[in-house]
Image (tube, rainbow, N blue to C red):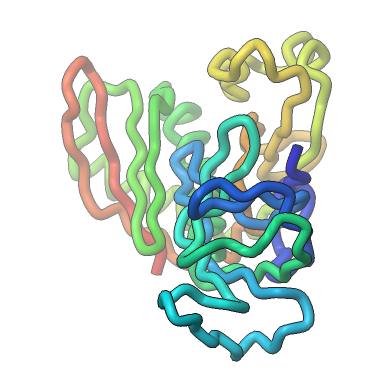
Length: 253
């Protein structure tokens, strides 16, 4: 099973790994910092190169496939993590260096933390539970169980979000046994019921003081270390999605 480096340290930008398996244009590594698509967060992209090869060397073979450097175009997680590569992947057993497209990853980290903050705000002040979300590098949206927001609501939400950002709250994550989490934490806020029964250890992400966090949610995504990294939040619109479900859209500037 691939070791998921991003679960412990979201700031890892470059890492060394061994190719364990090759399947068509996909490679399985023994460890990775590349985040696979999931939880509304898109996958990371970047490069793999043979260990010891200069990062600027992207020599091509006769078939047009990179001979020493590969672009990671997609990352998905099923039984393990699969890295889709440009060209023919490196051989099994090869040692490679992975390098993330850090600008893309950091944008996703900021938007994911902002989404957690928005989910907590909507639940606390509007009793609107999050039902889904989607993040991009320059925008995001969140779906919640609420009849309808109006323009005044959106303006108030924007003001409150920026107040929370300005509070410069710490963001942290840790793992807890599922039985302990279900017995001691608020299931509505942590959304533990959404996780498959097969998951016995829960990764929790908290925002705010340790003794009284503003938000505590089960999440395997990547986040920034403090809300002051989010910049300014702009609520950019809303849509009614039917069945008393609202979609609110935002961006960070």
